[in-house]
Structure formats: structure tokens, C-alpha cells
Image (cartoon, rainbow, N blue to C red; front, side, top):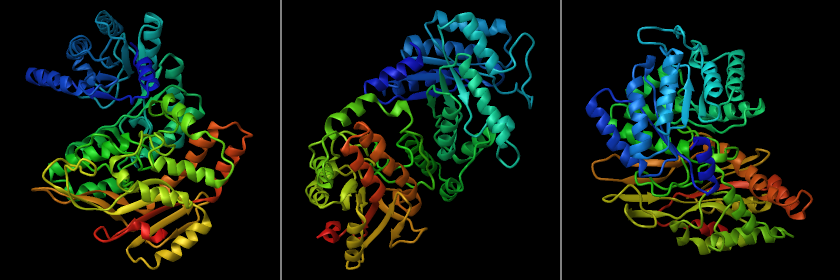
Length: 530
């Protein structure tokens, strides 16, 4: 089955599409270990897996062997990389015939890296000069049998990135135009080169759409497993490393376990909702299930414009539960109250179904403040030294203790915000940030303040505090938070519907507020609403 069709099938069922990429090992023992690892990873249900083609065609035979075994023994939909490096057409056709005879329908068509010992790509006699030639050949000779994936470069191809780490605007646009040629020639899927600055990826996707590239674009995410390897790979690919990421890794660069743990967290955040931090990761055992992360050290891939992460089934659920006549703001408040009390299973502001276990601890209080016009989309109760394996609020596995400050995130009118700000003066442990769509800012925290709201203490480990609240991440998230009013709720109504008009008025006039009670021992975040 073609990967692009399988992705469509998976997402139409309301599931998440994901894949694993493998590299051919250098030894026979390594190959056997790879298959054992594949068996374990495939048990998690990836949509597909792919196997790379070594630099300079160095692993051609091994790649063919592994790909065939993946498809027919491991039983996972397999995509094989195929490059032009050191590959005359006769060898390319041999590779394609081999995988076709083994039931493989998916190819990632690449120009490839320079052969060993060379700095630049050289077209082999009787071969192709570029990926476009390879795509044209596959479509011309094999028709529609193969699903063809091509590479996209959010920062432009490394060959055109200059000494300052950037491609010129002309080079970037030329790269996009070339990508469109590959798609027009028959490619039906794009997988990007690794990146660490997701703002660059988001821009890349938008730029692709602007020039008519409409096929799915899959972000390539490579977890950071060790510091030196990370620097080496980023340097090889000429990938931008945000200063904030460097700052986060620098203190732990000599602690392999800490770097790996941070790399898992970083990659997980990249794979979750973009910009925002309201999404949770079900079954995540290494880090807290908190919704807020440090956007100084993590960026997020697109969701709102990305069909993999936006199944139609979810839109239908929103239509069923949220599209009711809204005659007044009280009707809007009632929908948020129903959500907090567990009457609704969907939310425009969350990809998850139903209330999370810890939300049920405070759902009655949430229902009350929603009835009073504070429309919550995110919440967390305070926790003081709970066991890390507690069913509702634990994380990180057994043997540790977890802590968290109570926080709320909600929309409210300017009048209610003014009242809340005044009341908060009587609660020195309360900090808040508020911003509206027009970017008017109200806060009692500094622009550079960073507030850890979740942390854990585990045996023989440093204190882990991967969940924070800070103005920078909040301001980034607010763009999407306000846009969701239109995209995921108002747009479900006909254009001239009064309910749609009301929701747009809320979007354009309300503030998004983040509220934290820093007293996680004796505090009561709901007191400020009394």
C-alpha cells in the first residue's frame, strides 16, 4: 500500500500517523540487533517505516535486504530510500524491480550525498544528476505502482546555505521551485530534512502552499541522543540550532543520560501541537503530562494546516457537541462549563478526548468560574510531594515524588480581567499574564521571567523541571489560541449565522489569561475568583 494512502486511511480513522526511520548497521551483529529493535518498535503501530540508502550508495545491497525483510518478516509498510549516487540506471532499475518483487510500493527518491572522499555530487555515467530525474524515471517506467516521496529542505538545501548559516532569498525560492517540479513530476509526499527551529518549518509549509505544493509535508524529527552527535549531524545538514537550545544543552552536555532525556522531551514536544503547550502525551512515562513547555528550547510542528494531525472524525465530533444556537455570552459560558464537568468529550483547544484525570480533581471549581465568564481551556491542580506513580497526577515512573503549582488558562472580557487584576493584589502568591488579539499586554511578571510549574525528584537524579510558564511561550501560543475560536468553532456555523458572529466578537474582544498560584502547599488559586 502506498504510504500516502495509508496515512490518509489512518487519519480518517481518527488516529495519529507516525513513522520510524532506520539506518543500515555496519556489522552483521548490528543487523540482527536492528531487526530485534524493529520488532519492538513496530509493536507501537507506526504507519510506516523507512530504511536509508548509505552515503555514496555504500549500503545498496544491505538496504535492499533490510527493506525486503521489513516488509515481509517484520510486516510493516516499508519505504526504501533510493539515491542517484554511484547508481547507473541499470542499478536503479535493479533496486526498483527487487523491491517491487517483494511487495514494496514506496520509494524516497533522493539525489544523494557525494561519494566517499568527494566534496561535491558527481553524476555517474549512465545515471541521473538529480532527484527530479529519478522521479521522472520512476513514473515513466513504473507508472503509478510506486508511491514516491521526495525530500524538502525547510532551510534550503545544504548546498546553497552560505557561511553565515543562511540561504539567500533567491536560493531559497529556487529551492522551493525545484521542490514543486518534483511534486509536479509525480511525487505524492514530502518528508523534510531534520530541523530544530520549528518556526522555520512552519514558514516552509506555508511557502509551499503559496506556490501550489499541496501534498502532505511530513516533518523529519531526529531526537538528540548525545551532544557530540547532535552537533555533528546539525553541522553536516547545516541546520540552524536556536540559541535557546544550545543554552539548554550546554550545562548537561557531559551528562549523556541528561542529554538523552532532554532529547526525548524535545522531540516529543516537536511532535505535539505547534506553538501551543496545551496538548498532553498519553502514556508518556519519562516526563510530566503537563501542557506547558519551554518554547525557548522547543518549537512545534504544524497542526492546524496539517492533515496528519487533524482528522475529519474530530471535526465531526466538534460539530456534534459544540454547534448549538448561541444567543448570548451565557450560552458560550455554558459550553465551557459542560466541558469542565465532563459532559463533552471534545474541545476546540485540545486534541484529547474527555477530561484528564487530574482535571477531575478541580472540575467543580472550574465549572463555577466558567459560569461566571472565565472560559478555561487549560488547568492544573497544585501537587505537593505526590508519589510519582500516582494514577491521576504521577509521571516519570515509580520511586520519585512530583510537585506542581496550580495554574489556569482562560479567556475573559476586559472588565472581568480588570476585576481579577485588582483582586490579585491581595494574593501575593498569584502571578498572571494576559494578552488580547491586538497584543495588548497586562501582567505582574517580568518579560524574561520563567516559572517552573511542574518538577520531580527521583533517586540518583537531579531535579527535573521540564514544564514551565513564561511570557515568550505564552505570546507565541496566543496566536493559535485566538485563531481556534474561528477555525475550530465559529467556522462550523454558516457564514451568516448569529452564533458565528458572537464567537468572532469574543475572539476579537476577550483576553487570554494565564494564572499561576506559586504557593503549591497552602495556596488556593480559586480564591481570587471569590
